Image 1 (cartoon, rainbow, N blue to C red):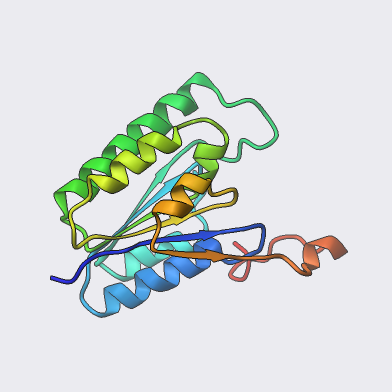
Image 2: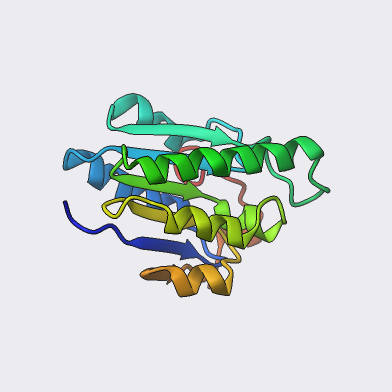
Amino acid sequence: MMQGFCHIYTGDGKGKTTAAFGLAIRAACSGKSVFIGQFIKDMAYEETKIGKILKEIHIEQMGLGCIFDREPSPEEYEIAVASLKRCKDLLAEGAYDVVILDEITIAVYLGLISEEAVLDALKARAAHVEVVLTGRYATEGLIDYADLVTEMKEIKHYYQQGVISRKGIDC
């Protein structure tokens, strides 16, 4: 088995989750098993359908929805902690070749889980597991730990012209 690396896709630009799902599809098409844990999210975005098309990809949503405009509820803290524990167990077991922790950096930024707890989970993973973390505001500690870090930078976006999310393109 080859060594697994840690990727981070962060920044204020569009494409972090899309890049992670692209890697998931590439991995699945080569016969690798993929787990995608979506922190914060609870809506069945179009990309979540890929788990029904490719049996190698398993997706779990691990949140109650967007919480940028309000204080997280006690239940959201509990869900985030339990979700990280589940992901830590999966990483350590090594049953999946690729594990994607979508929006986990947002969960850290909002204080739902700690950077230290995420690093503990990453350090406990089986050596062959490739892991991808996505979301804005990746912490310095996570960036230092990662082997590959890509920052998506928004230069221009049609949202600024009043265009809302378009099905199949943005959501």
